[in-house]
Amino acid sequence: MPTRGSVIDTYETPTDAVIAPDGKLIVATQGGLGSSSSIWTTSDGDAWQEHPFSDEGSGSRIDAMATSGDMIIAVGTGPAVWTSIDGRSWTVQSRPPGAAEWLTDVAYDPMTDRFVVVGPRADGRAGVWSTPDGRNWTSAVISDGPGSTRSVAVGGPVIAIGGELGALGEQDAAIWSSHDGVTWRYLTLGGRGSTTAVDVGMDGTTVAVIHRYFDDARGFEIWTGRLGRDPQ
Image (cartoon, rainbow, N blue to C red; front, side, top):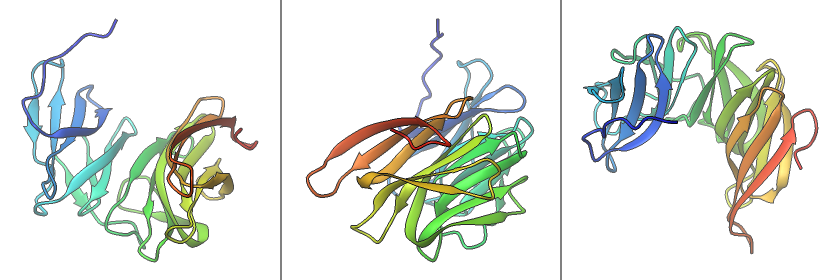
C-alpha cells in the first residue's frame, strides 16, 4: 500500500521525478509562464528541501529527468541540459549539436550505458542524441524532412521514440525503434497526429499514446505492439 507523504508548499506544477543515486526523491516543478523550474528533494517524503538548479535567468524549465544510478540528466527549455550527482547541485551543459533551444525527454539505456535525449532540431527535423555524461554527444539522423520527437522510453533491448513527421499541419504520428541507439526503424501510426508518449516493457511490448487533432479526428488513441513488429 503506498504511503502518503507531506505536501510541498508551492504553487508550482510537478513536471518529473527520479530517485537520486543516494536514494533521495527528486521532483522538478514549474511555475507560471516565464518562470524557472525548481528542484525539490526528500529522503522520507515529509521533509522537503528546495534547490535552485540554474542561474541562466528566468524561463529555464526542466521537462524531464533520468538517472543512470551514478548521475542525473535533466532536459528542458533554456540551457536545455543540466547534470547532477545528487539532485542538489546542478551543472549547466551545452545543448547537443544541432538541437533547438528546448529538449522534450530523456531516458537511460543500461544496454549501452548512455542517456538518450529527444527534441526538435534547429533545422526543423526530428532529433535524437545520446550521451554518456551530458557533455559528449552523438547524433543520429532519423528523418530527412520536417518532424519532431516528443518522448523516449527504454525497455529490455528496445529504445522507442514517439513524435511526428511532416510539415506543419500535415504531420503523421510516428514511432521509431532501435536496439543500439544508432540504427533506427520508423513506423507510421495511422495517419495524422502526434505520438505524445511511449513506454516499453522488458519484453519489448510498447504502448504509444497518439493525439489526433486533424480533419474529423479529435482526441487520443492508445496503440500497443511488440517492437520488431508493427504496433496494432
